Length: 400
Image (spheres, rainbow, N blue to C red):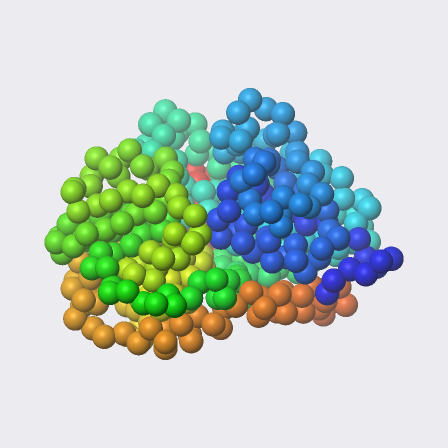
């Protein structure tokens, strides 16, 4: 649905604009569906996202005025619940939030329909608090101080789920998390992958014997598992990405590991085209990198959990590993080197995640919500379920 002149006014709200990652590629496609929409965000770093996003009318929150907001915006997390509620959305008929943190909790006008494309319920407030804010990451004192803060944030996140009229999940895995934490049903619309851009090389060269990681260097990505696996297997590894884990990972790496920093999309495409396989040790909510790699005909080795179980076909487009350990991944590396994959078949599978498919399916989900035919509510969640209380305890609180 594209707004016509005189049609509904649309606002799109995205957590932050600080780089062109998977969530921003989804945002770019949503912006293409609604070309007249105004874009709201907590903080914006100019020039950090695609020209298609930069060209929008963009309104940033007061975080933009805080010191070094472009680099330290995550430090201002305690302010996000207040600031997302300050967005003035009274003039809009349709509000679309693209949320992995706080913006699913914006306050829309009473007449408006709010559709949330949920990349994930807030990971660090629910089930990944130790990975982000464990003593090893932030120190023992800060860890203790953050536990009650994240528990309060989890309660706010659950309590404000009713502000969304219809949830759209980026995978069946995330739909389950939405059901568990928000007690809501959702449609599933997989994120878009530019399968025209990500494609096999026109003039294929011999496969590079090295393996490849393309990832933000943060704890939950478990890049250290890929490093250990390649050391055990005696193979080389190229790592594309940057993040707070870089120094620690460099210390753990041997001469077989090459850190490439971040690279332009055309360089990443060439790396996909030549790699023996792309490695994904962390559990992803969806995981755009594995689909980009497969669109280039490259197999994937991933931990068999999360969204990747919906995008990688065991034995045909890659391997799913039972546990995220260096030993298990090293065994998978050895298996892949003995296997013969069909790049054309791998690419054919990836074509099912195209940008055109996303735009059609997401537009249809919004139309259903506007017409009042959104997804049915989820079953009532038993707050005593395993996982519900344990996730709250991970954030430092045993009850809602």
